[in-house]
Length: 310
Image (tube, rainbow, N blue to C red):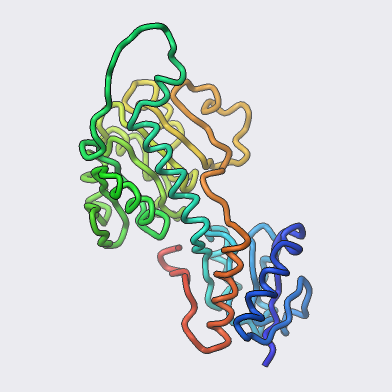
């Protein structure tokens, strides 16, 4: 039987994904029709971006799965009309990009690069950093992205800890889990990297109380989700020096409004949601593998747990 695959994403992505998916599905031996328009009751799979405009899945009575092009699925996971399996994007290209960005900014803080780049005052003042093994980096969120970043930092001999809501085990990483262990993780975190999903349970994970637990002068790196941080609490902690600096790539409102105090705060680095991006070449492979699996009766990869929200 031929699988009808609806591509529901921004129009400019269609000419990018269409030839890639055609190649991968053909190579996999899948009989398919791929397009941007089908009668809803004839669709087997929806390749989906949350900004595509598709919200009502009820008419898609033949649907086998919705395959998201985005890693973040918070805008769709509670859609009551979506009752079929939902797979989020776990793309090795996205993972590699995120790992590179995180490692780069951790090293920037660890080595004190900002000081040597921005201060050229003619004063010879040697102040070497500690070795990586004497610096504790805490990864909040140990999903695919968090685990990859943790492994990369551990390979550089950082003292890596991690926290997640459920138990995880990663070689070379001290793993904490559960709400009661978040405090233990943060009290050691000289550098904290946020890679948690955006759910009601993770909103404001960093707030006035949890920020106060961190070592004075600690650094924050957030390439995860904007709502993970209470913005006013972070600004206050930056003003008192409790937090030394924050590098923020994601925000509650994007683009970040020009009037937002993050832009002008001397101890904040704003990057415009560039920590990582879905690469069509690799993400199309992930999508097509799930379609192949669906047609072969095999389990889908990267399915979302609706109760957990990710």
